[in-house]
Length: 182
Ligand SMILES: [Fe+2]
Ligand SMILES: [Fe+2]
Image 1 (tube, rainbow, N blue to C red):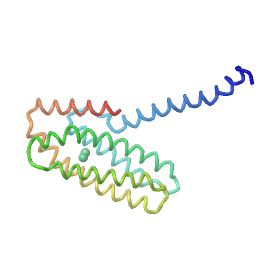
Image 2: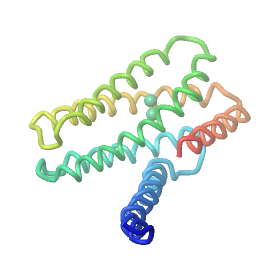
Image 3: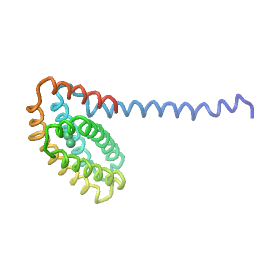
Image 4: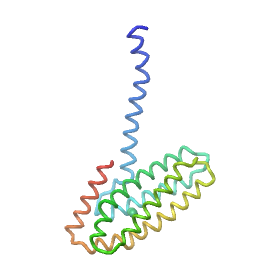
């Protein structure tokens, strides 16, 4: 086989691989932006991310079992959005809570662990499995409780306890952590 024929033979697969690579990078950016394209103070950014994730989860739960790929894609968006969100909270917000005193952030960390377990269960199960929707309901219930606690109690407590300069610093740190994972 001549060098020319060999080059021609590999050109197609290489081009396809390159296009897929570009597509994945683009998809990753889109997923990242979908859950964090919000500007504002840290508590508003986090609350907006809650809404995005819950809306994606509602869409996944409204998707019929036979639309397995759609369920999987929505779940991938939810998982990516929640990973970034949890990372930002665990590295910026919860440490700030700890600095205030009390051990309130421990149960928030525990919730995050439980959320990750449910996400793994959903990811590992065939999307048309009858138990998929049960796991999704359990995830939704836990997210609702956790997010309501953060928005009604945790965030306001932290925001009001800190001077404005420190709240601004939290917003800067939160944005930096989000960009790091985008
Ligand atoms: Fe959280
Ligand atoms: Fe949160």
